[in-house]
Length: 165
Image (spheres, rainbow, N blue to C red):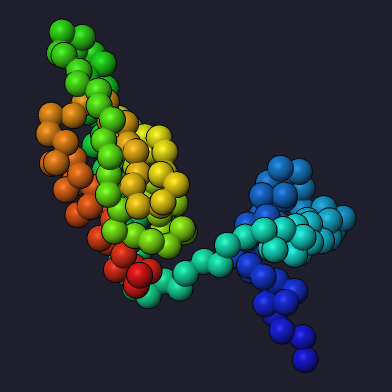
């Protein structure tokens, strides 16, 4: 019996690749569906050895809540950055912050760094070689400790709970 994981290491990625292929060619002809299916199977197979193992999602409902929280934070941060731009008389306080990580898994640290970078006004600039500190640049920092506490409570702790690490 052939195991599905062997032929489809990531079924959702394969489906996504097929859908994107069909959207790109804008056709549902048999040849395009066949070629898209071949690509959707071979690309994940050819690249799977380069991927890190993804941790198991221990609490999927918490993951959904986290995604909604991040989307809301992105929306609010867009408004805040726009307000800072249209008010040039306001004095910005850009600052680099050394953020001490509680997370140890590379995948979850990457998710945290990407979440920080997706939020307008902040960007993850560097992960230290020891993997315990993330360098973050923020556009307007009034209190460094408050920023660290905000990131820890809004993003890092939920990620730790979602992936049980």
